Length: 144
Image (cartoon, rainbow, N blue to C red; front, side, top):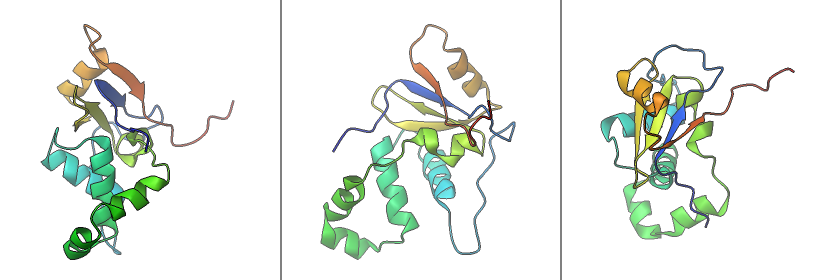
């Protein structure tokens, strides 16, 4: 399995992000959405998860896989998930639609910052060039 984590990186909101401040992703009638799970995990536990760990935890919660099954199947669930390529957080709705920048520290652990925040602005300026700054993927293809 290829390492899919970023290090010392800041992902800005998408150039065509429709909001001007960080917005909590809504829940749906049928249950919790992936963006809402990502938001809750990252806002409640900043710099706890690497991208790979986050993708796995979101998968477990979104699919509502019981803890007993997680324990019984051990690494099988993780192996099955990562057999297929997983999109990185540049493709997440957090920076594409909901206005959250994503910062990865030197260990690859993640925190989110609203586009309106001082922290976001500081990461974006990148004074001293400590990290790589890349934009989230656009929501739609440009019509050139």
